Length: 344
Image (cartoon, rainbow, N blue to C red; front, side):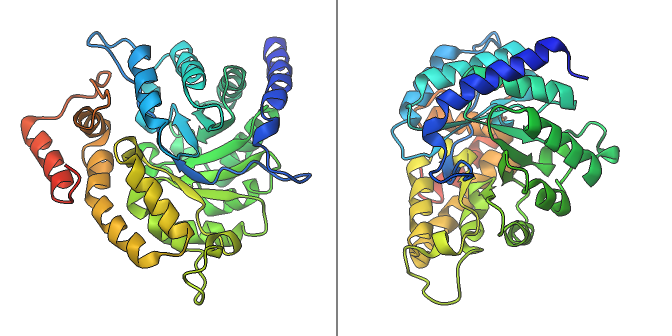
């Protein structure tokens, strides 16, 4: 049971969120918020003594704000959220809200292991400025995280959340794929607007898009490495170069891409090429992004992403322990993945 303080917080958060989010809801009665577009998952900068460096966070945001992103994801996997205290997670979201352009969406990772903690964190993140909550699958007891358990979890969170909810499946970190049947059921919830799928299985993304096509539900690719393929799932067999292809035959509608933290212009260009049906040019660009994307995700992870951010004029800095910095050999391999594709 949620206590009186949490219920009071839910009511307060709902009132504040509704008044703040009027401008981001799509026109038309009953229409959910449109999350289509590219989002960099913002890293959390730390000082040499492992404190959150809010000044560097704001500096990075001012630079990232010059690109045509739909918004920013904060406290996702690249934000090292498992290493932050609850108060730090909320303060980071609050600082990002203050520093980012007002016309962008802020998707905040509010997932916790228990349903009650997730509800409380979601309400709190709404109060400090989040436009939507991105909720990762609980995974510590993954052996018991059946479709029924996950449907119950997300339904409770969405019922009590004052802001829209985005499902988040990242099996590389959780060891758990959000089952397709659970996604299909949850897509019917009026406060669940979409999903970020970071698994990299394009056939699975295609199946989710197909099975939720009658719902007002959007899918975001969780990596730049399969961004074009995710967009192309909605491409019809004819009229390949029509600008309205992705609107009438939607596949994925965008992506949350770690690579956008350093190659923001290029990831946004890939989005534009896909959305305007320029598939040959999109293919050429996608090929040049595959190795750099792999380097800052599954190969070298957050330490690799932060190192390349340093090289590109952002502040990457150290990770919080137990994550370690790259070795000299790893740094050289990281540099090669970017230079061999013409980015350094």
